[in-house]
Image (tube, rainbow, N blue to C red):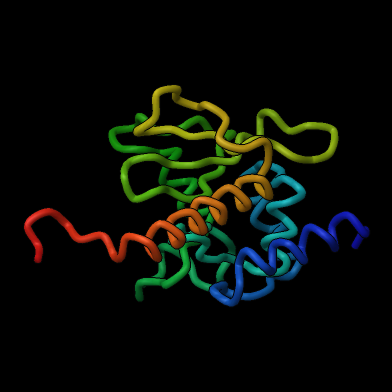
Length: 174
């Protein structure tokens, strides 16, 4: 591991905390790339190697748990290969382009993907948004690591707001 990657992983540890599946071996990551038919970006590969899958600021970050979305028993962690394939197939065959790897969604209709068609020389690609956004495919973050930092910053702002204003309550609930 390079010094740069070690520093990135240390920062990832601060963001993820303990809410993760656990480390994934390189062979499993390579097998996922083979199944997808796509390379995964450097920062996402580091995330998978050290965390496997995680919850960051309420977002489930897809990964490579030891269960599949197709298993009989419902898995706690979602498998990035299975979910990407579901999104590619779509409903009625109107799915997402096959160069997009599903990462997470916001629970409100916006999905985030790794756009592997835009891989740069450093082995990174942007995270793009589809769904409930003005610009379909617009860049949310320049790479996966930056996306993680954005989710963490959004969660910190929410936690600060909540400490001042209290827990938000749906209208009509007292």
